[in-house]
Image (cartoon, rainbow, N blue to C red; front, side):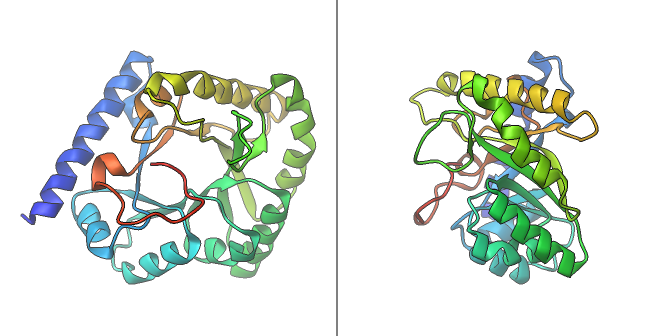
Amino acid sequence: MNPLVQSIRERYEATLEKIASAARRAGRAPESVKLVVVTKTQPLEVLQAALEAGVKILGENYPEEGAMKIQSLRNFSAVEWHMIGHVQSRKANLVAEHFSYLHSLDSLKLANRLNRFCGEAGRTLPVLLEFNVGDEESKSGWLAGAEATWPTLLSVVQEIVALPNLQIRGLMTMPPLGEHAETARPYFQKLKRLQEFMKAQFPQLNFDELSMGTSADFVPAVEEGATLVRVGTAIVGPRNYQQPGGLAT
């Protein structure tokens, strides 16, 4: 076997086992958590090796880079491509055309443009609403650090609900960086409470998904209810270079 495929497979399976153990500790079924392998800035040979190693979902941060990779690897038809990074509204067409899932819907402007392009393409896009539960100025997402402000978020959610070509599936967050995985736990707990708040306000909708947790903190994320974890470095190794505005993986 190709050494790169073998090494990625070993790290992928080890990560899946850590996810399964964390899920069991929380009284959850391991299969209730999906692993998104983040491949931003990785070369095509790494993505191909990951797919040959059994990876089912790939996550990209940059629409143009992701679209190029999707087109280059279109022979791997079984893979799901998730956009997990901040999307400028002017690049909404790339997401609507190429990606099967969006984790980072963070504005009504972006929602309207996605809805338009998805309509033109004749498709419905599953989306997660990104909330900034740490109220960090450097991060995207609707500010949701103070629970007392959560009712003010309902009107924008209602406007997105009304868009026919977007389907809300849940919530996403990226907590403040900390030295230890445990420092992220309170933010994961807060997103879980926000999920319950949204479920109560919109009982007709499916808010079941929670995208939270990266290489540094996916174990507590799963323990606190994550259904999607975004892990890159721990599986495919360090990124080749850094682009501004990306999420940690």
